[in-house]
Amino acid sequence: MRALRAQGTQSNFAYTAKYDSGIQWFVLQKDATPEERAYWMRNFHCATLPPQYLEGFVNTAAVIQALDLVLSIDTVTAHLAGACGKPLWLSLPAFYDWRWHAPRKNSPRYPSARLFRQEGPGVGRRD
Image 1 (cartoon, rainbow, N blue to C red):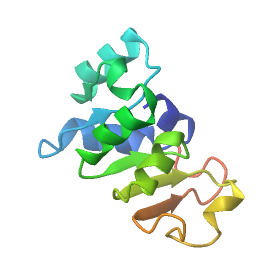
Image 2: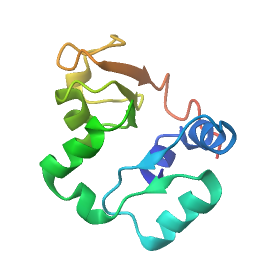
Image 3: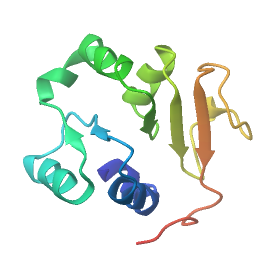
Image 4: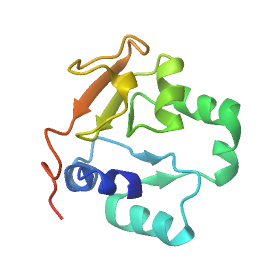
């Protein structure tokens, strides 16, 4: 959630997390503070995992394999989900890394990934 907020997509995520009761959300942010974890659980009903579940690639990959879909920004978790072939929705900023091949909506590196690009700096922000 902290990383999504930086890219201006936190509001859309927050609305869906809070009001769509058919979805169970899991936070895969290993370095989240106890305050952040409590905030997500209280406001968005997101399940947080103990940090040891996300310690190292093998453990994180095991958690990812148990999910239906991973929503992420360009992080190691996104790359791991893509490498595992897990469906991945990736939120990219207006000025993204060259590896995401403009103007594609998918990735030749990760066929299971769907790319969502910010249209321009500040576009989509609802701060």
